[in-house]
Image (cartoon, rainbow, N blue to C red; front, side, top):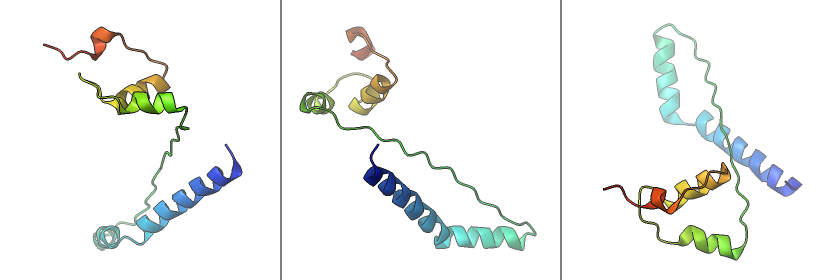
Length: 94
């Protein structure tokens, strides 16, 4: 992964942190909890996943209309886990 992408991921993390820190909704709830006599420690974990865009052929595969129980996103996810499905798995269940 190049340095530019690493910097962008870091900026994304900072933006998420800033958004949570400045959220009025969160501040109100934290205040309510403190009024009940508790101190609040909020820790969030963000997992950022990147999928490198491959060739034009794979992009076309992702945009094909898919019938059955899986969306194109489901199939992309399964493919990333090296899980392949037969044509029977892709057909809708009766």
